[in-house]
Image 1: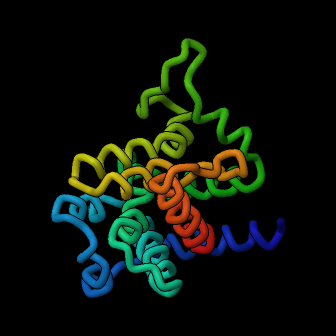
Image 2: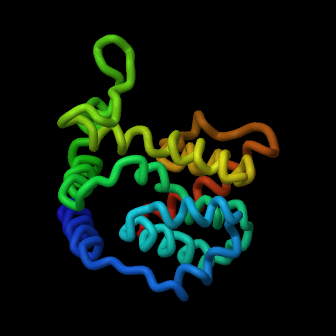
Image 3: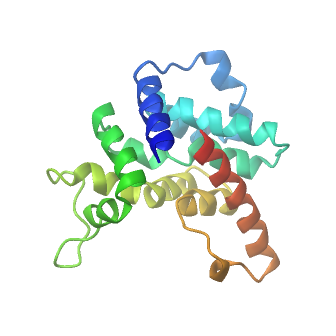
Length: 188
């Protein structure tokens, strides 16, 4: 547990100094539609840096499917719906590791079953975190990304269990790519 917290603190410090060169980003842009490239650029620099790290991890593992690689570059794009300061991101990352149930509860619907607006006060960062897969998937669909890319973005935080093992060939392919995306995301 301590090792994971130290890793996350280091990740936070790296995010403060993150930068993405034009050349570095261009090496990955070939897997995105022009509209999806604009989505990638909407992300905060630290999210672009993270997305490129996930992309490179998948490439190192031998993955070449453009739909999976596009999902790697856009999996956190929904966070661009609200620019959160680095300290709020750090709190979310630590809570995800140390108090995931509390984090989930803070990002849930209000007492009337409505999702909190992103403009609402103290819970705003948690709602952004909870909703970013759905928001990002919608934007990716609107940007012309494949249905597989959209599904991977929407599900990249899903907990995979034995009960969720797919039965159809299409579901198995999505599951296989989702496992790869989550592994690369978790190591970066």
